[in-house]
Image 1 (cartoon, rainbow, N blue to C red):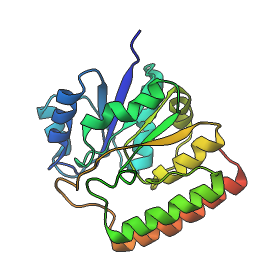
Image 2 (image 1 turned 60 degrees about the vertical axis):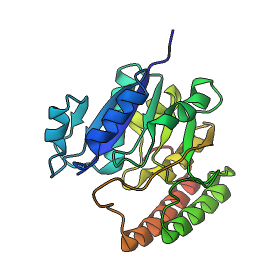
Image 3 (image 1 turned 30 degrees about the vertical axis):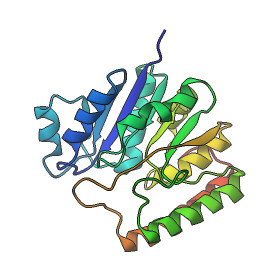
Length: 235
């Protein structure tokens, strides 16, 4: 029996990108289901999703990336999906690499597989300041868990059934990608990476500016240490 795979696409004010993202996914990966999680967008995202006939969840309040993804994991868990894949709604992630990200989870080699732009160094590598922050967090996660993950903030990742069930109940909220790695390791899960090529945001403006990048690094660093020292497994 083929595996049931669901692609979760968080969307907040992505009117310039979301239609193209869904079209590319449909064309490239007809073997996967998808669900756009519209996080109470204030632009025309919801209208575009309706016009395009997309499969989407329209949240009544803004929950942020963590809350939105937790809703997606709950949907995946309740509907019996074997693998859930997070793929951003801004056009940075190429669905041509979806099979590569899903592969190690489908084969039972990993519980979480992260698409990393830093393994081969091809494609868009993010800004210098954000790379510094990512490298710092990567080193911190290595110290805390013993696991080397280069692209700790990558939002292109696949999770198997064990983590779908876990994240449906426990997930970090603000900027959850690095914390989810620590939570997964503490939950006894295998985490790894595969190389992917990412593009720059295709339209719109990122919510993470220079100030928020510094805030993000400090907040997440403290959160990672607290999670690791407390040994807790929830968000």
